[in-house]
Length: 129
Ligand SMILES: [Zn+2]
Image (cartoon, rainbow, N blue to C red; front, side, top):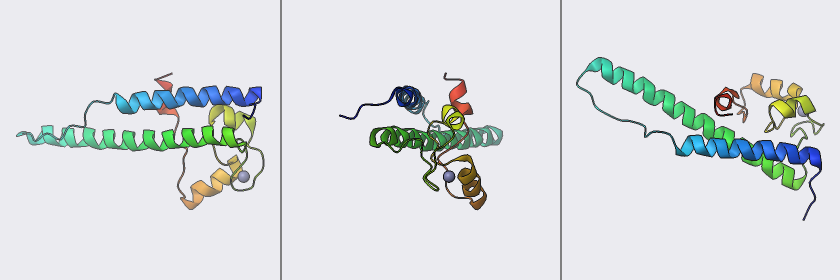
């Protein structure tokens, strides 16, 4: 078994905690209501709440996948290396976004190109922390 350096263990703990928080969020969500209402305003309100709930589920699922991938990279020793340029990702960036797969420069290029990102805003975790 590979021994994990202590700084990696910290990231691992952070990621494992975020993983369980995300699972908690995903599992404990109230059912997504698909109710028909006689009142049209109610129905519009209901539809927009449903859209929001679906967007949140999608976002949390993407984040969960990113967190799990980062845990995998800790295991295989590639954690902290940019997947594009293979340079080390700034530790400050990893401290803020431990599931980052790219350095800031490469992430900016990826965002500009509109490529898929596994880095949604972290705000959804703030209230859970
Ligand atoms: Zn890079």
